[in-house]
Image (cartoon, rainbow, N blue to C red; front, side):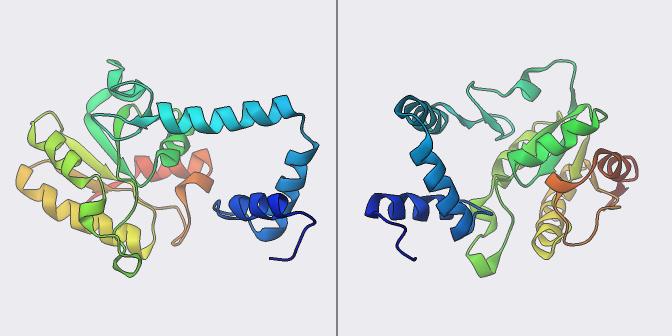
Length: 200
């Protein structure tokens, strides 16, 4: 990386550049922005990072991020606990909630099967999903992984594991483009994908 004036600034830029979607130019802009903040603002920012890392963990049921033992969706008696939507990451839940149409609960895998990246099924939250289904409290599992090669492979792998339990396993009817990401989909596209899901 080109020298931006001082070693601590260079180190800070390199740390920002490790974040997804942040290139080196953006990282440098963020580093300079931090330098323009007051010490109090920087301390508040740093505390927010540390607090999130220390206090947020995975839900005991669905593996979503939460401060409590169970997340707000799993605790909500008004949600349909018998319908489970399986997503890759917690940010995908936000995308579904924007539709205001899905009333079930979720299960977060925290990744997708990707042998190239060294991610096998054992590194995902699949065992937790199987435990939920084996308890007999689930009627339908909606596979809502992204329409990518990894997303499709993960959906098919999990659907095969679920077949012996006799639950209905569906896949989103993607009006979503192949290679697209759920977090960037608009509400209508996501709603239609939910509405037109099909059994796999």
